[in-house]
Image 1 (tube, each protein chain N blue to C red):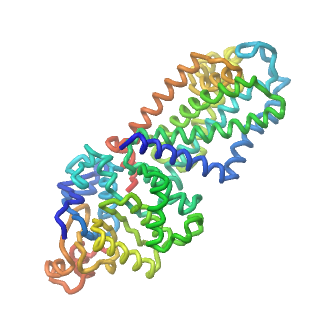
Image 2 (image 1 turned 180 degrees about the vertical axis):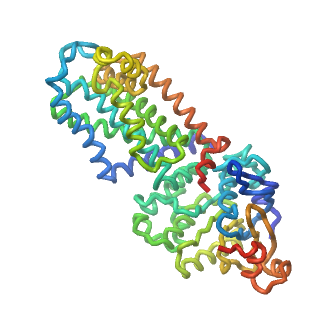
Amino acid sequence: MSLLHYMRAMQGIIGRELWRFITQRERFISALVRPLVWLFVFAAGFRAALGLAIAPPYDTYILYEVYITPGLCGMIQLFNGMQSSLSMVYDREMGSMRLLMVSPLPRWFLLLSKLLAGAGVSILQVYVFLLIALMYEIEAPWQGYLLLFPALMLTGLMLGALGLLLSSFIKQLENFAGVMNFVIFPMFFMSTALYPLWKLKESSKILHALASYNPFSQAVELIRFAMYGQVNKYALAYTLGAFILFSSLAIVGYSPSKGMMARKGMG
Amino acid sequence: MSNTKTLSIEKLRFAYQEKLALDNVSLTVNASDFSFLLGPNGAGKSTLFALITRLYDCREGSIALNGFDIKQQTRQALATLGIVFQQSTLDVDLTVQQNLHYHAALYGMSRKLAKNRIQEELERLAMFDRRSEKVAKLNGGHKRRVEIARALLHKPSLLLLDEPTVGLDVQSRLAIVEYIHYLTAHEQLAVLWASHLLDEIYPTDQVLVMHKGKIKAKGYSEQLLAMTKTKDITTAFAQLTQGELS
């Protein structure tokens, strides 16, 4: 197996995912509607209710819409990560997953390529969302948009790996609602996406602790700082660590010797 | 018939937790062999395929493809294998061509080589003119043809087909059976074809009767008839599987 083989395979996997996304207009639109509703309706309504102190990376008072924009970028990636990984295993993608698994490449490489493809799709969604936000005068410095790319790549990979991990260990999950209730909502609401950590501390110490350990919070902080041209090293290390942990466990879950496929009765 | 062991399975045993799915299965498929794995639903055919393709881990016994052990030399072994799954694994949102290019990329083929091979295989199956159509628009028989073309793109030496004709009309079924037989006879392809449809068996096929995870009998149709002292393959099969033909 040459390096060229690996490159061609990865290109094929990513290309297929991007093409599918671009041609599925409904998926594209629905992926954008969710964060836009939050931005234009929820954030507008909450603008008056929430007072935000000046805290890094912001060096001035900001509107609530500005605060939640990085959180909504994270939300796009969270939904995308869960949706692509879960649908991959449970419904129509079951077949293509099989096809992938029987191709002559190491399984870790195939799963990583799949994760990269998923992250690529979510990055596309985030940039389109930010473009719309820009029209609404929510803007970041231009360096921020550049630095955002590697940050989104890492956060997209981490959230995709989490989805993959869930899909490898949960036996029966036909229904996306279960993941919504038990994973997406708790992760989203117990994070810094909607309110800063110090605000949470004021209301509940437990919530504050949960939010600070929540890998989604660190992903959002990584995105937030990157948007303003800064690197939050703690968030970077935390997100990277979470990605390594989730992806390693997912690879174990998908290895034939651990029998995930067998447990699911794929035959 | 050549003596090259394209697929060699020895003393394979596999259980889903407590339930034994395969018990002491041994079989060989050589180049140019058409091996017909015949068994009622639940006999263990799909489990066997999942083990050969390494979707499941083979814990007891061994599987070798062209001399490569599936557990130790997985990638080399899988590179020689083409597979048509029971359920369609085509992406219906993509065109025929895009599906095939995706497969070619997974097998490390260059764009140019892939283009040529796609044309060759689709032309042989009279599907080249439909290469730009979305898979969703194709009927069941045509989808199957595309899957066969795809499985042959990287020129495997062993082709596995898991109930490939289920749900197809008679004409499509016969055409596919004939085409795969042609490949074994003219291109030295080794084929392991799992089915419970008895009318698909040719007299030259090596029939492996599988029942409750065991290989109950092996041989050409005539040998099976002699072994069971029956006059037709339906009765022979019913006898070997004790009337549990589905």
